[in-house]
Length: 311
Image (cartoon, rainbow, N blue to C red; front, top):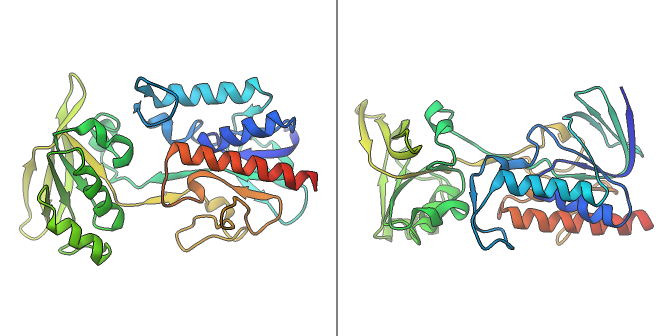
């Protein structure tokens, strides 16, 4: 068991963590970045990325994160493969304990542990993730131009995703397990008026249907909960929009969070309620949830930490 001490400890290695690490390393702070349970974050389970600035051609999510982590190391970040299981933010230096048994002490901390889309939990859904099944319409909607797609869910995010997809898809079917939406009334009004959107009520997705060669979605099998009958719907894309949850269970009771478990930061800042502790990326952003905005807040955190350490 080893103790690692640093002036800047970064938990998480997605775009927010990498961006914070690059800026902190270039300020000669010799940061340590602990990669976490999913090294590279959510982009490592995304196949094609077309909306990250700087690349004229479509790139692969895992490749992009591999390059970011290499860049972190190149500029002087110590990247450690470990998963933090315990933190103590009550005294300085802050302390984190890894599942490896190693401990990490730090003068400042950036929490970039990210968030995860909630999934239905179907084996077929996992199989077709990145091959027609997505958790983000703004990320992947472009790939479904003039195609018929389905959105699963009934809250604000589901209705917003369905409305967004009408910019690309020829038809959007929203599948909801109840007989009314939880979404805001103004969003519902827009949805019901839209000629491209159809709603299937009281139904659950039982299976994602698709082809093996090449791996691609061609439909969904639905169970109507009222009649207990099954039917198939032909679609080439399925967007799961039943919510997200931030990876913040580790910090419960140690730091201020909202009712959904997102870390609260000061307006226009990445500062938390604990001096020296900052939060960046999807762990504190429930609105945009994009790689580029996560990277931006990672940069902000590193710049704010530099001022904090100097003072």
